[in-house]
Amino acid sequence: MTHRLELLLIALLITMFAGCGATSLAPDYSQPSDWANLPETPSQPLDVFYVYPTIYGEASPKNMDLTRQDLRAVVQNLLTSQAGVFLPSANLYAPYYRQMSMAALDPSKDMYQNPYFQIGAQDVFRAFHYYLEHHNNGRPFILAGHSQGSMVLIDLIRKRFNDPALRKQLVAAYLIGYSVTAEDIKKYPWFTPATGPADTGVIISYNTQAPGTTGSPVLLDGATCINPLNWKADATPADKALNLGAVFYDNHGKLIKDVPGYCGATVNPKTGALETTPPEKVDVGSFPEGVYHRFDYPFFYRNLQDNVKTRCNAYLKRAGGRN
Image (cartoon, rainbow, N blue to C red; front, side):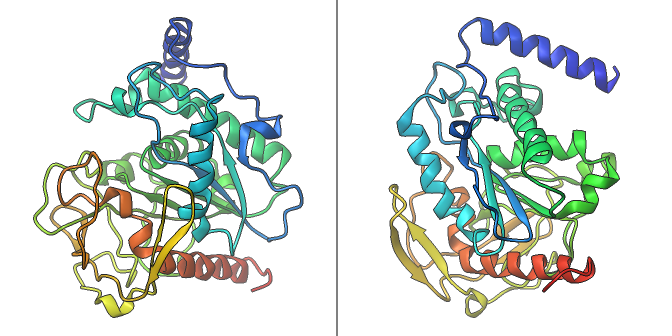
């Protein structure tokens, strides 16, 4: 089956499901109200295009209703608790999208082919196209997401980044909380995993869990992983002394605590997991015990923030821009 035919079939399925009341009206990205964040006057030489994680879990409808102000408020909080790692270095562009409900997730199947997932993915694809056409103005950009947001961006990179011009603009893609696999790298050679703190045009991906944990729905076979404390992709352990600060926010975006030296981390080369032992019991939500999916950003917040600055400076220096 050709790629074009696959896209046509997916579009047909989306239309059928949407006609059955699966989702709300498609967002119009020419309207600022359909962006969670849209800078009026970009002040940084680089951008970040951020896609939020799964926040919607109800059984019906199967896709997030973008008219719900309570869900929009959750996204706004994530602009601090996750996308805040990019804000000191880049202009933030973040579209609202009709993500698939957590109730529709089925890790036993290829979720990229799920028509409900594709409703949200196609929203983001249109938002990214609109961003490039109307807002980017040729600036370098970061792609950033978490969980379902990272899934959507993986799908976007698979389908769009065979374009050398787009790859040239890419500073890095922070695809955290889902798996970029060895199969992805084999099938899509433009997926290049990061191997250090300052390489550019690369993928940064990891899934956090306790040593010996099994059953994570986001950690797939062959997952790539880099350690956000020492920026190594091997089993070299990173002591907690390297942790510049774990940062925790409440559900309203209010800072709870900022803790340097919170935890160390080690890549498990066999499973592709980023293993850590936090100094306190944390609420893993609906995930299996020991799967610290909710804390992929918080545990390593300051290190991510510092690394974004490092990669942005490296990109600008290599491109002959200011540093």
